[in-house]
Length: 146
Image 1 (cartoon, helix red, strand yellow):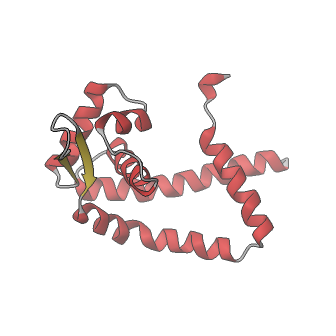
Image 2 (spheres, helix red, strand yellow; image 1 turned 90 degrees about the vertical axis):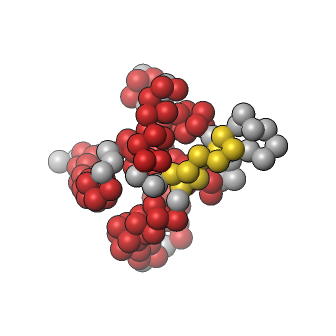
């Protein structure tokens, strides 16, 4: 097997492992994997200082408006997301991941995330840059663009 094939196999194993963690969280909270992706998108938008609007969420998930609304409704019903009206423009809504969702996410995923951090710190700074570059390129892949 060639090195690129070994990388594909390793990525597939990692995706399955991460997916299993996500499935456990989904079952425990009565949500699906799209809902989990929505929580991740919202947290990423928040960390980046970007608007956490339904439109931004839909764009991040690649979903139409009606499908995005269904995701938000499910997350809100489960106490994982709050809709908040903008104080300056009452027509605008922002979405906030609840403390309950964050606490549950930390409890579910932090051991795995800490293990990833530990693995990364065992690599040189140069190796970390290569790994980060590869993973960024991997995340940006869109097979439909070819």
